[in-house]
Amino acid sequence: QKEVEQDPGPLSVPEGAIVSLNCTYSNSAFQYFMWYRQYSRKGPELLMYTYSSGNKEDGRFTAQVDKSSKYISLFIRDSQPSDSATYLCAMSSILTGGGNKLTFGTGTQLKVEL
Amino acid sequence: NAGVTQTPKFRILKIGQSMTLQCAQDMNHNYMYWYRQDPGMGLKLIYYSVGAGITDKGEVPNGYNVSRSTTEDFPLRLELAAPSQTSVYFCASSLTVMNTEAFFGQGTRLTVV
Image (cartoon, rainbow over all chains, first blue to last red; front, side, top):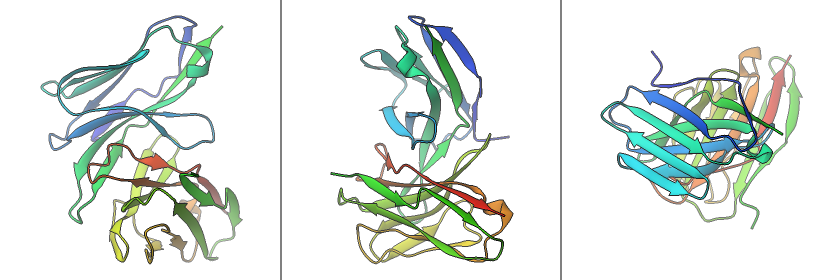
């Protein structure tokens, strides 16, 4: 079983739709929960991170964490064609050498159509 | 402010050849990481560094080596390239130990034939 599970999609929605992206995880040691956006042939860029259970909002994006269910979500309101990308969830845990490791989901490919 | 810069962007290697992937950051971050991204597999941690002179293995270190002589640079060395090392390699850096705001480079796309 993978530590982080994410539906790879692809997910296709019309412009203006609300998008829901989800990940489940099995490792209770994960401390922080992030969402990255990755455009084709580019590096991941951070959208949001959260620490505790609950919601965090940033513009059209809302990140939700439910630690009891080991489930995180990213909601995108009023989706735009420019949101078309692969969305990666990531979770951090402590490394023995002193850093913090990010464990990534496989990514969900999103296409927002005009 | 360039962020994280990786070179080269693309490279084709023959089996058994060696090369160094370069990574430099100008944000004075102590924490630096190398990941590889394979289709359907997510990003996997190869090596990481918590500061100049300090490196440690990640999940998939076999076939790779790193060094960190300065805060800015974190090169990844591939010795005796194998087809299994065909992948996209990303370097990342972060200011904090929690790694909540990691900045990624644009990636190096490597093919071993």
